[in-house]
Structure formats: structure tokens, C-alpha cells
Length: 100
Image (cartoon, rainbow, N blue to C red; front, side, top):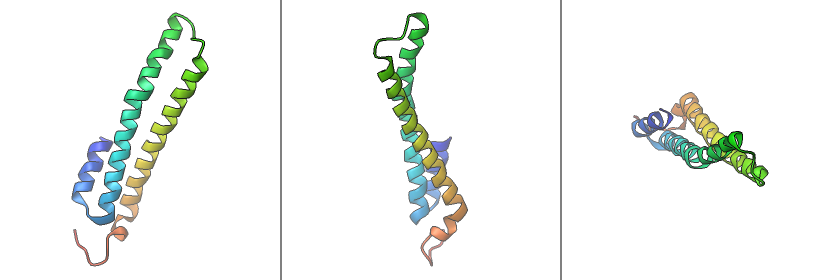
């Protein structure tokens, strides 16, 4: 929903608000992709530890998961901030004399 609503907002607005909404959509997509192709495969490795035992390089695997988690959390948070900025001061970001 974050991706879809940001894209709709980007289509419906102009100038700086459009850029903010498009940026939020791109960041939301990035967050999804990092989760799907970064964290989820590492989660699969970690689940195997419950059946067997942690691998010798478990600290490296956990650090990699942590890096993916930091990236996805940061991109999602910045996307949220862009939407909040757009909603709170969006009218003031348009160029003077432009109408939507």
C-alpha cells in the first residue's frame, strides 16, 4: 500500500511534491526488495540453526542480516518522512503561481 499510494500521489501532484512522492515510492520499493532478497534468505539460514546448530560463520551471517535490516528500516523510515513532509508542507513546496 505504501508503494501504490505514493505512486498515486506522485501522479496527482506536480513539481516538488511529485518528486517527494516518487522518492517515497522508490524508497518503499527498495525496502521491499532488501527484505525479499536480503533478509528472507538469511532468515532461512538462521531457521536451520534450530534443527542443527549455528554454522561456524554465524557471526558474519548475523552481521549481514543486521546490515540488511538497517538498510530496509532506514529506507522505509525516510519514505515515511517524505510522505509526512509532503502532507504537512506540500502546498508551500509548490512553485508560486502554479495550480494543481
